[in-house]
Image (cartoon, rainbow, N blue to C red):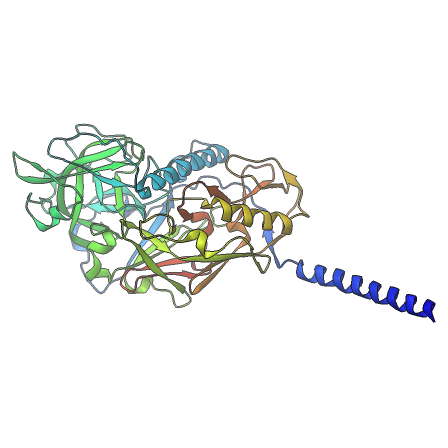
Length: 479
């Protein structure tokens, strides 16, 4: 009798162990997707239609306010055709590190920065943009008749500006420097005008009583000159009376482009200035350059809103109005929510510390250190079948995929308030050389500020609806 009881007990224990093992197997089975192996992209050649490389005759231009505005975007790598893919990738990571550091400075409440002293200025506008950090640019006509130049487009900056003759100091750019005396729509803004007062800090040229601007960037570079209004031409669409800085003294900024089109949330950014014309709406789609030859694009106006977009509310930083803050609630890897990644790690506090911004000019997504470590460890567990490779630059989770054409990798989903964004595999496991090394394209930051970068945004149409105070994500949006 006792022997039978012992056998029953043993059988029960074996069944319990078996059930536990099968449950463990079920709960650790990761959802995967296929990553197609590609190499680092070669720099694309610029392919602007001829009419956007030269000047338009005025008869061709449209000022129809009902027309949407669509632009072709190119990555800055296409201006460096003499460099290898590896060199371009290293430069991209260097720009990225500088930009992230400058954003940390811009959002740090106690950080004092040395600013260039300029007569007439008690302080300066300080932008998060750092040296050479604009990643995408387009071709824009300035003045009347329109003179076409390359301009960087940037969601982390507000003021629109370009280099102007005569140059006290100008850096090298691809096109002739804009001469305002040859445009009959250029007008200086008087010192006491409302537009001048919109500057965080304005100076005044006592000789001609024209408003002066200065933007000092996080790395010590700057642009300084006359604040003015001018006509900008985008393909065949003319936008009049855009307030912009006509910089006669510029140092350290991105070489090649003539200036910058600020796309931030501040009062002087291009989307806010042209709010009535384009209803404070724009969107872009950034292509994965290692897998597609088609250009990235940007749209202004109501047609920027994608029907398939899932939206998350914008939140405001009371201390800084430039950046686009959104709420990240959590992250899933392989279909399971990552323990240790909670909304509290990404909270924007009343003093303006912390939070999550989405940015077109940062490449690699940065997460606060505890969130990154939890995400990285979850991904490593799900990718344990892949051959490990040494760390590379800021990436500490890399794999040797040489000789393979495709692999299965755990899925990654970003959970924003109201919008779950499921990333394609190419948006988080990227080539870092042409020898088959791939790295997990997230990084930790000691700063409280987390940044959703453009590698994670690839292939989505990212919609900025300032009127509705929301940002949307439409998958497969580059078609």
